[in-house]
Length: 168
Image (cartoon, rainbow, N blue to C red; front, top):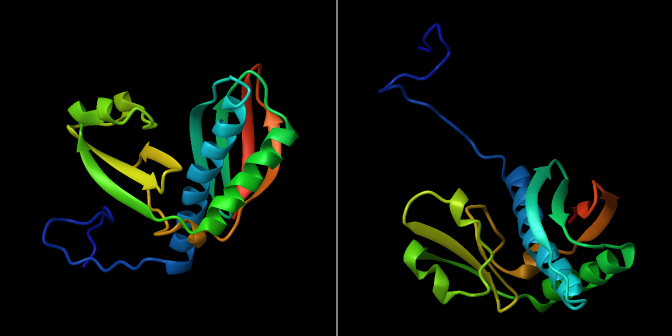
């Protein structure tokens, strides 16, 4: 029997289900975000510039990356899209491990915002030798699971700040 508050109480039995199709869609988008961000980072770093991730949003059928860099163009994004789709086709393994906070220095390529992670343990996601990042999200087991990725929109959201929309 549900209490008047509508909230569960200790000892109450609750039944829940996972919408498998929706979960798969978000898993592909989230994994695609890792691949696309690293791809854009590679393109920008080839020009000796830096790209930083401000935030990431997942919506129904769309991901949005908010990033900062000196300059970003459609040519950059199309090059990153090609890299991303090549990595998807390579079918790289995606693995996870847990490291101690004191071991972060052993992973110089690790993308991490340590101040946002509580506790002493950090979950790290490796995408072959392509990407290494601290992340709590759900990921495909291999890059081929993303299927493919398309950049759908691109806007400048202030000086040096960009919004990149994509789908898988």
